Image 1 (cartoon, rainbow, N blue to C red):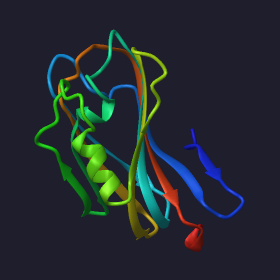
Image 2: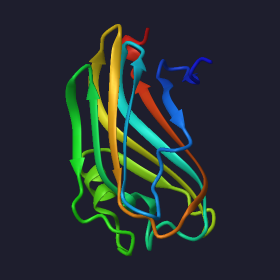
Image 3: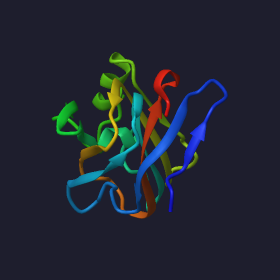
Length: 167
């Protein structure tokens, strides 16, 4: 099945490059995931991922982004993003360090507070790199322990391509 793609009228394209229902935080222990897939060629403006689902209670005292303790994104063997948050903990009621860092570098974390048990978090990280033909990404993602068990959930990884070199 082909990955979803969304093309805007001004040439910007969003392409889903990975999806599963398992790369999510756990209430039992810290969780680490190593994901990889081929990616289409083009000018990558941003990389993003989204986690959605429901849990028995809130995942953390503040936001789901508080649970991200590490993120490393590699393209064709070149490490382009490496964020390690040593203070990630589900009892922190302040702005997450991960979210604050992303805002400082021009990224963003958007969370929808639909209810106490539903979560929907989207993360966008600016990149600005050209992916040649036959490219491959690797994502290492680490979560702190969640405050509640996830009953259903989904993980998606996306790339936003700029209009200058869309193919």
